[in-house]
Length: 286
Image 1: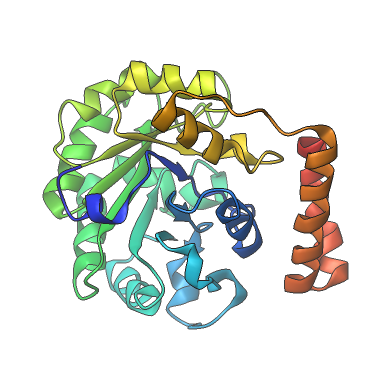
Image 2: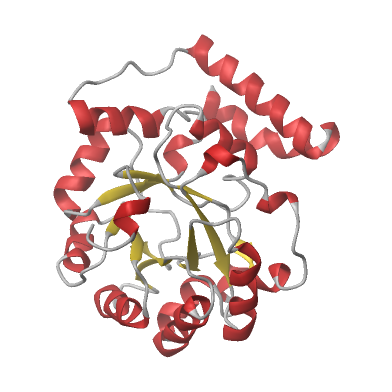
């Protein structure tokens, strides 16, 4: 990593953004294990940020750095205002160009931007115009298998000023089905000069090793693999640094983490909302 991102990112593993998952509590939980990995917030609407300057979704602690705040949108002026709101909090600003959810792409945000590279370029330039923070982009291989434009798209994002890329090895049409194509990511890495982190299907040390071998990426962004197993990022970091495999958490250890996670969500949101929103985690912990 040869740009200023190298000074910011000290780990080859990062926490990938996940809507409704990578909130303040989850990020704090990851930081209990890894002190160096790049944390990323859940996707935050630029329209929301342009109107509201303070909210629980923006909350962070001092030890959360390095942290990237991910924003979504398709209006350059609104994205610029949103970037200015989060600049005092963020170490890096990430633009979501990969979300496959229907209501997101239907609003011209997320992965729909891969069908409109000129607008995506304008968004990168708008976010960079003012805040002196590195700007990154997260996108997919393409909208469909007939539109695998990720290499050209990545080059355009770099030319627009993006300094870091996270790429999910699936198309929008795949959503989260099938397998992430780590080998395809290698083509992007070979054609850009900025750091590239591979994302998708890294759920263990073995899958991390294979993903790095096949993608030749600078690092890995882990999303769903950490749900119910927040020590995974640290275990992969430790292995990449030392070659030593740390033991996976026992059921008893997972239960203790679950209790802490739930208690902290209750403190953040109140008991009624926290209990309802936390239900999605139980099957992962067990």
